[in-house]
Length: 123
Image (cartoon, rainbow, N blue to C red; front, side, top):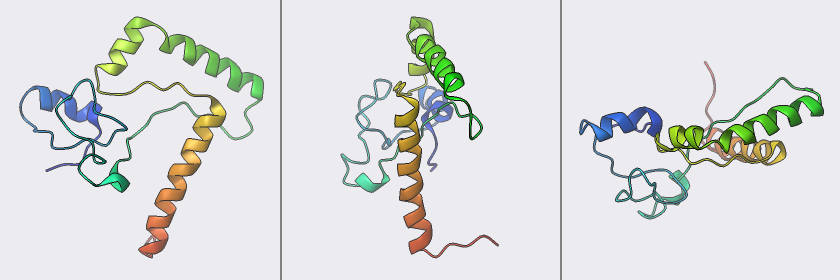
């Protein structure tokens, strides 16, 4: 049994070498329409999908951020790019830099609570 990101597991699922039981996603995935989400099976707190994004160094000038964002949004509108990403079971969002920063902060807060409540420490 593994808990893996779908892009790396999907080829093994399609090959019949892994059997998906549940997915961490906001809704059922096009690639696995018969596989329920964690929320559907009553485990909503675990329903946290992995995400990808483009990050730069702190203090990157706004005009550079805007240029990279515009190029990214443009590339995500290309049918071949969309198909390649969606074929991995990924969901394309393409939000704004501010929205992505808020998403990262929200994820950090979720896992910070886990670390704090379990009193986890680095050795």
